[in-house]
Length: 137
Image 1 (cartoon, rainbow, N blue to C red):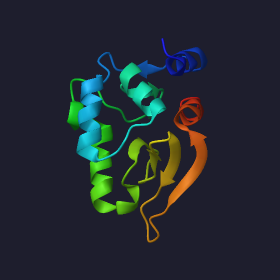
Image 2: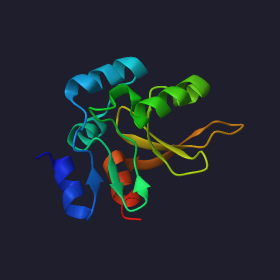
Image 3: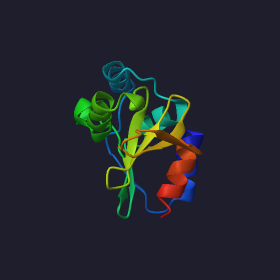
Image 4: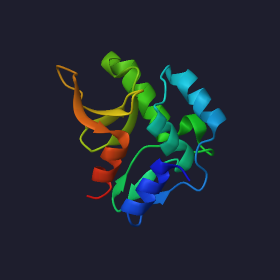
């Protein structure tokens, strides 16, 4: 078990995840399709869990059944097409009202609210730190 998976299972009770998380070959296709590099934590997240949910909070992910039709892939592709500032990052969460959370190749987290400025706001958290906060809510 990876340290990433162990941290989540140890610290977040009642977490749900896919029975069919993404395979390494699927993630290779996802990276090629979106033109982004997965960070170490994001890759572990997708390989170990596929997606994560707890209560009413469900993060985006990729699983072996949906592959390129998974919410992470489809939403990331839409944002990349409409908002060039989001390119190079993956959408990992939607907090509602068009408030997206993106993850870069270094596993750093950004908030993105499409608006006049279309700015990425660094949250100063890694993906693991974000997950620990988000799924504890």
